Image 1 (spheres, rainbow, N blue to C red):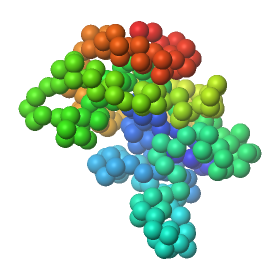
Image 2 (image 1 turned 90 degrees about the vertical axis):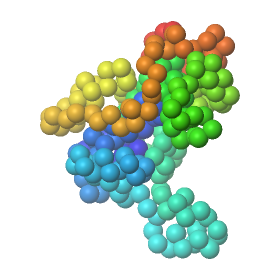
Image 3 (image 1 turned 180 degrees about the vertical axis):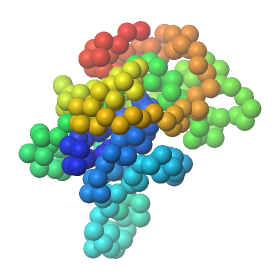
Image 4 (image 1 turned 60 degrees about the vertical axis):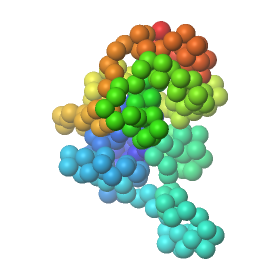
Length: 237
């Protein structure tokens, strides 16, 4: 998440939608008082190398950290004010109403079927039990794993919407990411050219269309879990 008072926007980072790449680019245009949330070390190094600002203004004051330690809080959790995937509902409760309504709020959505495949490869990269060195996962492997996930992991709706409607002003399509981010930047008065990096893009090794990978049972599960996104964004099987 980025909360930029300097540029007058809030970017909500959804999962497996190119959000890290967007954050890297957007951080280049932020001011010193803007809130920029955490990225993992490899992504943070990439952000710095491309001229972006690192995580900033996202730490609790010292007395709060000390109190947290005395209460036995985990070191990492007690320090950060905002999670990098904080939801719109959560952030709205933490900032003044006037500020919430005055800033441009945007996020990224992706076809939930395609996103599910990307989710598998993301989890495989971080989970040794899913990855066998030198081997490629079969379609059955992908389906079996994704069928075990809770519905919440198959949609980003909870990040940028409430039970019924989106809480953001604009939803960028992953499928047209660069052009739509450029359009938003222009609306904010930023005309500088940029190229979105491919943060984490190399993790997915199977580039077959999702229709040739996802079986009937998994398709049904995704359609139920991501029904709001499918309807809102007119995504089809």
